[in-house]
Length: 215
Image 1 (cartoon, rainbow, N blue to C red):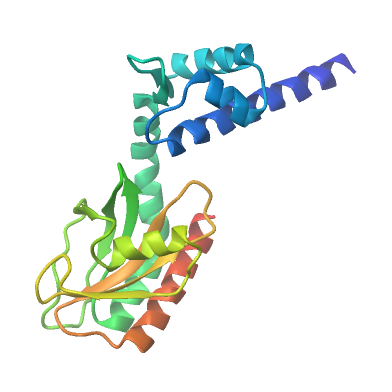
Image 2: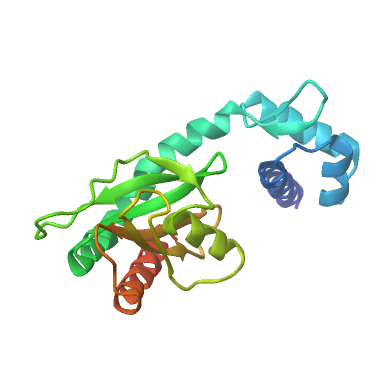
């Protein structure tokens, strides 16, 4: 009975620690200990204990004003996870690139920007966009970023743009939904206008496939 009780306490502490980590991640200006305690519904002493454990692993830090912010340890985990995300998405991206005859990509949110995590070029086209893995852009510009913002608002449908990131480039993208902790989109970019209905359906199917592969 005592072992079961301790196991329950450990699971509760772990849950609170993870919830605190998510709260800090979602707070762009950081969180005070009091704010964190109020949102978690626990005492300040409990928050101090959680922060101590998370800070020891580099997951959380306190800035000069005492506000809680993410630590560098989160970046380490993110870097380790990125190759796994790219690998899981590649089959769907390859199918999409071949179907649409356009460069397909998986874009994720990092530091408030969209970052191309995986890129696949079609094998049969004479000309296509060369899109560099690691390319960054504001979420407010381009189909990939706009699709991520649409996903935040609960909209799953494809988004089309023209010339927002590069003159003469056309994009269609859809958000990847249903993967906890991941904000991402799948899309294609081409040098000619894309059939929004046909390509949009292909992009949406690819986004759904990527979500299933990463869930």
